[in-house]
Image: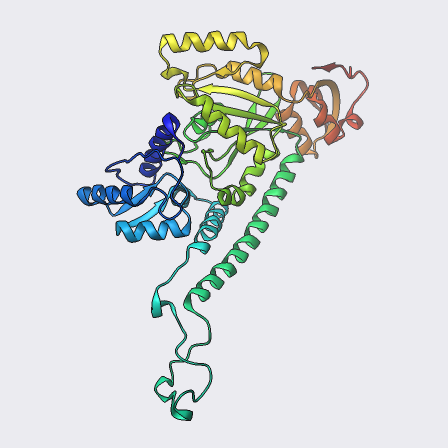
Length: 432
């Protein structure tokens, strides 16, 4: 684990992760070493101390805040005589508990199988299906192997069979995930038929993204103080002060040392971030180490190849700050100019109007065009989109047509080909 104060923060985070998984933490042990022991990570003496603590508290499970190699995990279990898991396995367990959609369950299972495959092991004949020599006779001639008749296996150990089954299951899941990815692409393409920009909320786990998402979109996404309470992405429409509509996406929270396999498995979900026109990086302003956690989020965004996207910093949970902390934070934001973070509280609604204004200003420019339109009443979809995405000042029915005086985003004009619906007297004025 990391050393010093950062290591203690990481250990405290591990405690929260364990509680999110439903565990009761009996005791924590912190160690500082120059280098990790290749066989046991912490050394035989420390393991004896851990075993004594586990015996005193009657704890059946030991969790390490480091990623254990298969050899280290096996050695530690033999010495402590208890089940041992590492940080990655704990996170996978939490994800498995919270995944609700078929997509999320597939991605978690894939990550679990990738993690389990190199850790399969067996002992003695219990894992063997080899019952005797493959040839007849042997010492003693043709009858030398008579005592072994009926116990010859197919030439494959049970361990090898398990590995083959896991590989087959992995291939099946990857095929299913590819199908899910295609389905998500089709849904995204259908959304893109209506030209709406996408805003993705990202941030460290437990930064309050879901609370902020609910406050912005009036959705009912699960809100919980437990880590990784939200896994499956949710998309909602949001109207900005300029009357433009955008899509807001709530994504899974990030965490330091996020398992590589898990990040790869959840790429189908994180494509919402990769397709976003604007990223809202949400931080917990009440956490004294939020700058360090923000760096972890930025590392993951870089791995997702979205670090070049426009990012708007949002400092959430300002309702938890003391007056002194709030004052210093406001002074810092005032000195940053237009690039300053937005101070909000998803719980109380403070700062949401300013956040919407900043989102409106940061989204790609889509100027409003004033038009006089004559649209057949049979084109209900066109009329609905003009009302939903634009601002209609006047409308009246004439014969089988609807006459409209409206302001419509330029992208909608192009997408719906409204130029051919304009009538004499249209101003064609553009307003940004």
